[in-house]
Length: 605
Image (cartoon, rainbow, N blue to C red; front, side, top):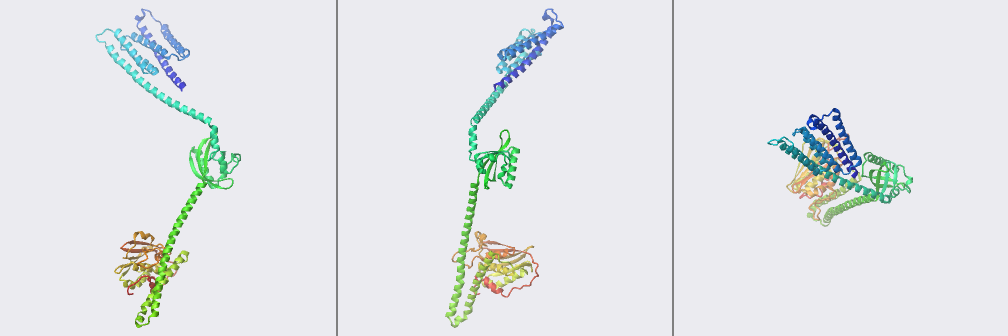
């Protein structure tokens, strides 16, 4: 650091000295010229051309000798003394030049600025101000004692401003010199501190090289140095990870010996990117296959570095196979818990279903058994008159049992994939209308108005007539069941272009918002209390949805509690290639209606 500063200082002083000597030579030549032009100073002695040339040459030789002694003899010792001698000689020459010029307004006075600047740059503000004051005193002294006698010494007044300018130049330049020196010292101190830290770290690294080698060798992580292909170094943990006994077995061999083809392509691309772009701390997960053929999950952190002046990759590997196994185990546990919860929920549904089934089975059987007992015990004329009533009750409950059995069988068939729709090209409008008309007497017996409406007279599409009857009758059964006397049921068929919309809407009790999403789930009932107001197993709407789906259709519910419910079915408007079969509603439609409505009680019907 001191060598740099000394060289810098020498360069500054050398430059200033050369400039100063040049100015001195110029001043000498001008002074000689003034002497020649003003022979009064020589007392009549004339100078020839040789003398005029000899005097500057003599001065130049003197300056060169002074510089030689200054540089090689004094070797920059006592620099301030040397500079002071130079400044004195420079000032003396300027004074002579001013006196010889006979013009006290001479521009030669401004040459003092050069002396002020050089002193300030070389030695700082104090020296610069001192030289400026001395220069000012000399100029003012010449004005007072050598200038012509005038009433008002205008030369003195003008040079007062010049002297003030000299001092200001020295002060401003000195402040800059001080600021520049402070900044340089600050930077030098910071640089010294960095050099000191660098030396300390270098010393510590040299002292602890064996320690670092030991740490790398026996690190808990696998450490490998390679060029993106060939292995150059493996520590003990890396040998263990790859299943190798000695590094000589794999040294200079391709590390991709331990990769399958897919992982090799991915990892090779990453290593190539690290080398080309000199990347650091590149982290990724990969799989390797050790010598025993075991797949090992690895967390890889690689960085670009130099190894023996060769660009290489330092790779640190960590076996994360146990972590992956724990994650898989957690995932399996989570899935098992989910499956367990679903199983418990399913068991809950099944329990509720069997509770409902037991009720649904017992009720009609008890009614049938009671009616049979009455028929068997009583034989009076009054009882004989009511026999048809008891027979109708038994018949209704038989229908109820048949419906229950049919629904259970359909569930089993659907789950097993054995329900295949027997589609025929039929008029969906006439089929729906016939079903609706068959329900009218039952609706009227409950005091409910049933209204059928359509925006088309005929719409041919492929569907299973029996399944469609089951769908519509089930929806109408629910509408009758949950609509009080005085209410209405609306059945509507609409043509939607490539689809047909079938809507069954009632003005009944409606469905709570929190039950809507579960309404089509199997074994689900809105009213699950033991004292239910309405009979049912909770599988009817589930079957309806299943039957709609096997027709590639969809069903949705719109309901508001206390305002009624609307079930909307959307069926694709497609025909099959088979010849259309003219089908009328079969004669046993009444029997199927009785079966579907067997769990609905009608007053006086």
